[in-house]
Length: 172
Image 1 (cartoon, rainbow, N blue to C red):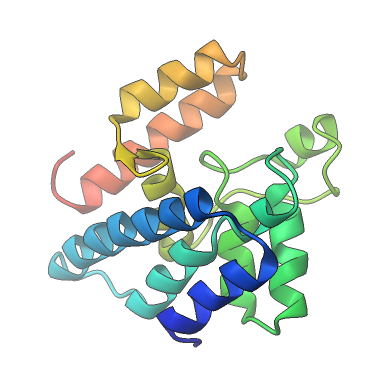
Image 2 (cartoon, one colour):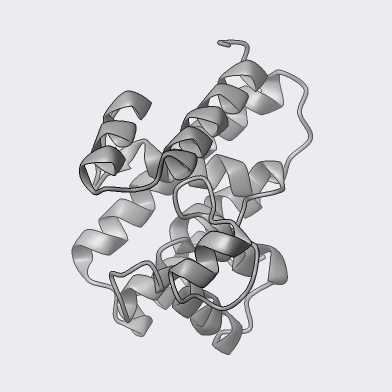
């Protein structure tokens, strides 16, 4: 696993702007908070993967701020020789994931983008809790999604992911 410093260098080298980098640092911090809480509940997870995955989740924003940033981020991650586990976090972090059918509708490569592992879910959820570097509630995230006209299925997945994380943390 690459170091935090190496991950930050990749963000800079790839062309991510300072706001994106600050957001990635914030997501990584929230993700680590969540992961530490889960560890204390006896969950087995990789804290280094959560940290680095959080830092690099928006790597694709060096090339696009559209929905395709996850796919572009995976390509950049491959070009840097990053582990498959990091690539999968980047691929699956948008909202609470994108189904294969939604991916086709969004003109993304035919694939399933739903987070599967606990580490993937933690980073996706942490990303949902931030706008830039400002922490928001999951209700506010859902409201923002509604205002953007996102489909009810996507919004419900974000809510379900938040509930799943809350249950693991003993808050559900």
